[in-house]
Length: 356
Image (cartoon, rainbow, N blue to C red; front, side, top):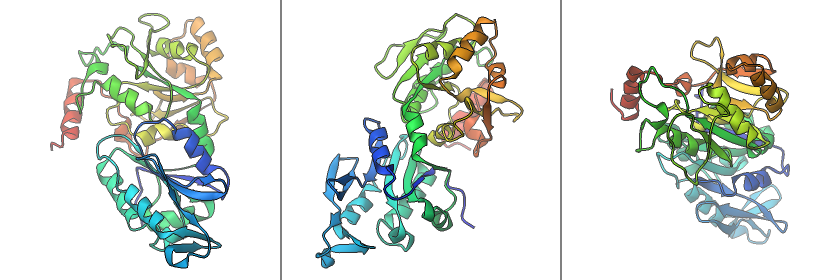
């Protein structure tokens, strides 16, 4: 039996259903995107490599059998597959990034096409990196993919990326950090980055607009994010969430600043639930309650939250209990643990530095 793939996400859909166009629109301007797409330009399929922003000949005329591979009634240049295979080797091992593969199909299922580099890429991402491979697969082939490589972390449709496109993010920094004894937002876990900035750069892989609600913590201004004050001082995280909602009219991804092991897949999963709920969050460590500081809030929450806040309420956990919501159980619970004490901090630092 194949294992679970923790960093591989499938984008499923029927042929000619707009998957490639969605990827082009969503990832335009996003940082740290690798891999390739196969857009249709003037009725002819091209291979577009993201690392060098270059188009390559892909779909061929039927009369070049010695240079092409036939897939049904279509013919594709062999050299283009080599270009795609090379693109699958181009990724950093520490930086959070997307590896786009458009697409996996019958050739790869039989060990041809973008193989063997595709299998090597999956192994490398699973073992060594913070990246996510987003692989386009036709609905009819999803089970074949899972049988060959393992169960993907998520199977999504293009509507999930479209939801991400209309979502802002807020990183909350303003907690008192009384148990830690120092501002958790400023702790550096790895690569010399304060944790609030690490969270900004993580959420930037999903959302185009990022807020940092600084609360009582001194955070410098930056072009990477918009610095905002809580609607009222010393009123807890609800004041930061409401402040971010008031800045824009989109959905809101809320992230506390004390999740140093959080992965991009964990955030993407918050967008993959039913659109009929107003909030999607993870269960806390006890699995008894919803964690409101790692949560997707639908934009329809704003008027409800305004009324709730004006009534004197401050517990976001209580607010979530009053609206339709979904609570997820994390597939990797350690990645969504918040770090609140010096003892927990030392344990996480040893883990991140590779110590026993």
